[in-house]
Image (cartoon, rainbow, N blue to C red):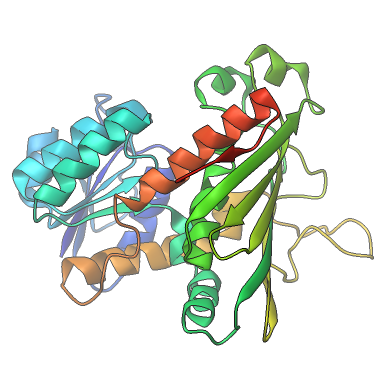
Length: 324
């Protein structure tokens, strides 16, 4: 099996390294729109640079898209036209209108398209969802999700980030409804600037809290921020009728009574390294017809609708209700 990687930035090269380590992958093909960049990323056997997108699509059994967000719709459509299965990093489009159009095109085709919300591939998250949807935990009462960056992003990135709800919290806005497996009927969000005034200048906030109410009555509280001096922290707790479960607590979680954890996670690549590896395994299994798509394109509409509702709620100070 040959897998193509479009885009050889940090995420693309990480995916390429994980693919290269897999026995079921014979070759990894690299393409980047910046001339010469793909060639520089070839550092080990089993990896080869190609000259253009057409060559990548022609020679690959599946393609992973890890280019900037504004290029995602064009590349996904190129994969659809070529009949090449694709795993596209989130989001597949930058706004709801463009995403709806692309989702409709994807569903009219027969080409598998997976969206790279890596937490859906995290083994602990997958097991938690199984325990919830099977009824093993009983009815869900409450979910708490914590997501804090160790360090703020480059301030030059902020004006194009989409804001804290579309950028940082989008993962929890995807994962928590996926876990609970119920529609969200009400959203309330609040945010503030506490880390740096650069966020205010970008019309954004650097700390936020979101309250979700689900159709069955369960609530979720999502807390997120751009700076945690102890390290990168992401945890989810589920309180249910028969049991309570927490994931994301281990020896490297930057939290505890003993003070600073010198081995805390520095960022998301380390914290979710098992998820990223499993993501590549599942992608190849979908290509081989041995697995269902756990992250279909239409699901991406849910998290983006919720992110937009959060932004509206933050600005108005009022909850947003309805079909979310």
